[in-house]
Length: 185
Image 1 (cartoon, rainbow, N blue to C red):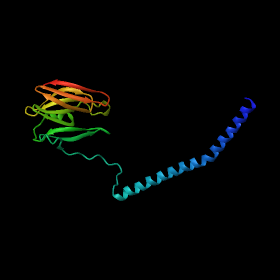
Image 2 (tube, rainbow, N blue to C red; image 1 turned 120 degrees about the horizontal axis):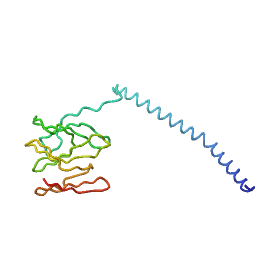
Image 3 (cartoon, rainbow, N blue to C red; image 1 turned 120 degrees about the vertical axis):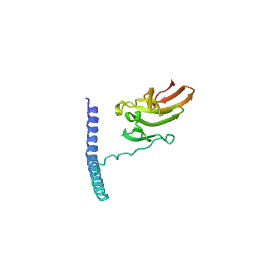
Image 4 (cartoon, rainbow, N blue to C red; image 1 turned 90 degrees about the vertical axis):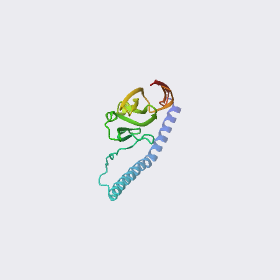
């Protein structure tokens, strides 16, 4: 290095050291203050929780009751089996008339579509979040208590677009791409 470069090197090094020495106590004080405020709010939250009457901090999810799933369908009622975090709930279904049913062996989504042939249900192939979405669209015929798998759809957003005589047209969209599936009954 020549003398001019050496001069600028030392000059900027002293400026940088001065800035660091002056600002370090401010930054360290802010960090300690932030940790102290967080600790105080945490202690206050614990005290208020005890005063409110909650002895247990961890509360378990309440057991759900059998409830009507769809306003269109009176025959089927469901109970939450598993709630996927940031996602849909998985239900156990049963007939509300007390007749043992094939529905009790599977888990379903909340979508139920009423058509002339029966009910279109979203049967879950897995309840593990890493395997979702993986659904079979099934036709449930309540008269003979049969569940027939029509197609497999791997997204949460699907609907029955149109129904012609013996043809069902399903449309789906997974956020990046969409598709259409036609099923003959």
